[in-house]
Amino acid sequence: MVDFPELKPKETPEEPEKVLVKRENVLEIQEGQEGRGEREAQEKNEEESISKMQEVKVTQSKTTSAIQKPLDPIEQKIESILEEDLTEIYLSMSKDKQEKFKEEGEKTLSKIMQIIHKTKINAKKIFFLIRSWLKLIPGVNRFFLEQEAKIKTDKILRL
Image 1 (cartoon, rainbow, N blue to C red):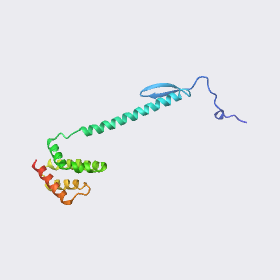
Image 2: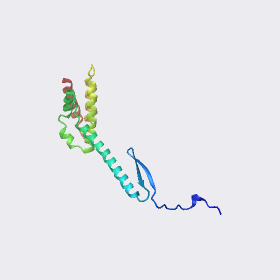
Image 3: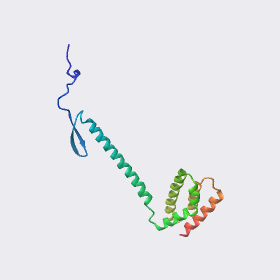
Image 4: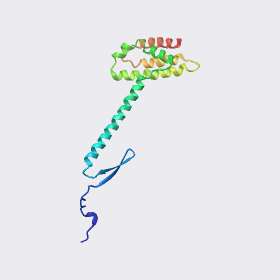
């Protein structure tokens, strides 16, 4: 019978096995089986700290985007015109509809700003943008939409 050295059970050495581990540009020597629990705990702590840092980055980006206000005074005036007389309606919407309405309002504002910065201003495009944005309000009268869009368009054009 032939003995295969690969199949023989390994004898445990007196001294635990040492492993080289690279952590943040530093090589560390860690114990084999005995230091395993400490190493796993250390790795878990590092993973938690990384996930916390990622959460902080996300919340920081959200707060900075929420804090940033348009610097252009024309843009601020247009934003106030668009918000005019809609606070009560906005507050009566559900949270997800409020978010969608707000996002569409911001898109509408940016499109209106693009139209205004052109040499030739097209009032009809501004009117249709505002009307399509106001259509997001649930259960609103069609005539109210037309009237509000017309009023807001006129105020924007007076700027």
